[in-house]
Amino acid sequence: MPEKLPFEQLVQRHGATVLRVCRAIVGANEAEDAWSETFLSALRAYPGLPAEANIEAWLVTIAHRKAIDLTRRQARQPVASSAIAEHPSALGIPGSGEPELLAAVAQLPAKQRSAVAYHFLAELPYQEVARILGCSTEAARRAASDGVKKLREIINPKATDHD
Image 1: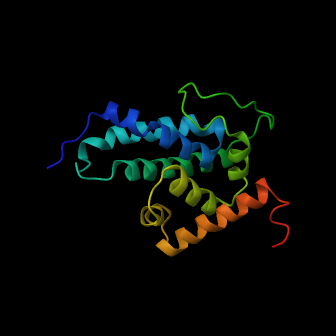
Image 2: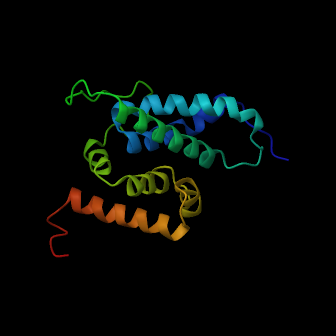
Image 3: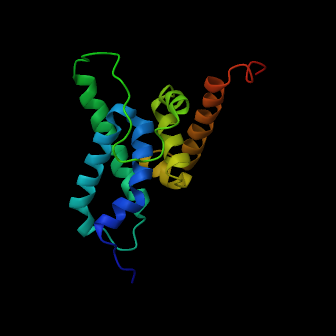
């Protein structure tokens, strides 16, 4: 029977992936809040998690739910300013050095953005992405494919003009 790692090691091992996913889903300004809420929730639930569980998929699932909660809360909040400066992560996690790509990801529809983030940033298989998004594996694969195609159009519109 596999032994469970101390929670601190989970944070060290999967923290960067979860932050990249949060950043892709909710944006740079809210990513650390989503990340913190993800790990607080995970900390409470971790004792009941089976030792053989896919930890990364479990954490990405929690991050997905926290991102939805955060997005819903934001929709109910007035926006004080539209020009909030992006600040570097205090966690020193990779992903903050790709502002053009993250801006392009932010332009994707929610399902495509989530599918791209979970598959390409968290490296989850399409079956896990489908489970998180509540759709079929094919639908998850299609959403990620459409998202990548749209990213190519956003990043390099001249290269895709012939379509």
